[in-house]
Image (cartoon, rainbow, N blue to C red; front, side, top):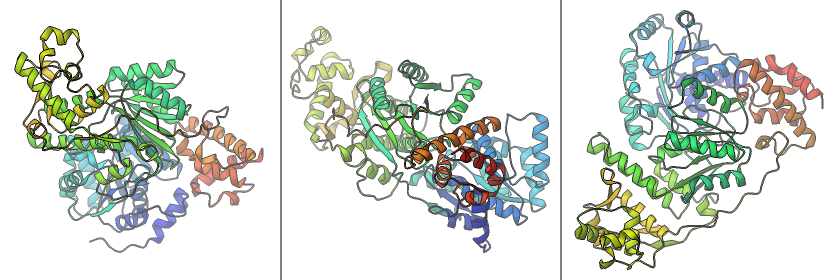
Length: 623
């Protein structure tokens, strides 16, 4: 059982080191519990302040003589930025990864063994090596192993959206160092994934802290895919010209094509995928983090650990595998709490592709069934006619009321009963296979049902079928919506080995008999209510943090941003690691004349006040 600990020390660290006067949400009880030596599983949305939940206990326990905290982190870029931010705040932190040479690695290891490092970041595959474990043994023997923090803990679960087998080996931490507290953290985990994390990391006795999954500043919009790239361009031009954003595509080739199209349209867009040289990927990621207004077009290889606070939109040109992935990826928008958009275009081919990947997977049937259920849930979110946020939060077991902000709340779609259309589609597929002995794709089946006399219809004599033309009242968009539902629910399957042709399944029978109702949203051609265009400045899109400042305050804010950019370049860090926009806006509003005037501004701890106070005053004095 953890010992009792006073919250005075964590509160003091919060203010003195990080410059914040109060904890947010459940941070305080988490910090107190872990500081006192308790195990914890923390689910907190992106931007909720997960890092402080282990960084403050690490500092508090180090001050109490308990030694080093080991942070298990899956990404090199995240380690670099986290350690850089801690150095800026005056905290002894280091990382061990492949960017260090042998001499640098040995230096970090020696400092760790002497107990000089407060937080040490390392990847799971390094933490579980015999060499590293022997070093942890040495620390443990001397009572200098303080805490284990396992970040991105969903990676341990096969049910999660980013499973990494190397995380499974982390069970050794509990087995070998049972007396050392552990905190596992993630932004995304449904009940099944959460249970798997608990079992795999042996956290059965850990206290669970589950925050609200709601990100009220994010506006969710999901549109039917017609010409996805053109739809994306229109969305960016109307809503986010000059803003930083992320566009997710399923394939590497699509990433390259979309990035080029955006550049041709005047956007500052960069590609990112696993097929690029590692140096190019790193360069593009650094540009995205350190420069303003860049749109990163990427596969899901990009994103984990991206702490950039001013991403104003995340767009999906292809449907993700599940809601966890969608939530994790959209959560990279609006980390600063200012308004942001999550926009997705989806279509029949997305459903076909995702279903095919599940069916062709070498995994066992139990796993496939779970993955199909997760895909069904995402499709239900996409096809929903009610509040997106209610659906999204409901998936994670959280009740809520309509948000009034998503596309469905702003512009409610009509709903229609697609049961008759579904039965006619399935009947057509059955009769085509019966007559021809072969299967066909979605386009040909829809042509038959709608009575279109195409070359293929004539060639195979399908104009004579009893179902020819009996669905002429349905539009192609309506029928594609019905097909999406039938494929996602398993009432139809797609044979990838036979040119993506449609095949009936056991599930077709209930629909054909009218035992299953198929309800769908009407295709909404008119866009959701447009947000007013924001005024642009010479520096591009203005920061929402500075929106309430007067003209002099805006000028002061711009000067502070220019100064911050210079400092960030000198330190080779993203600008937000020096000071967040909200901190600069608060400085610009206060117009400080003395160091005392800077005290109490959120985000200015004692080390930053000492390091940058005089420069900030010099910049402000010009106004």
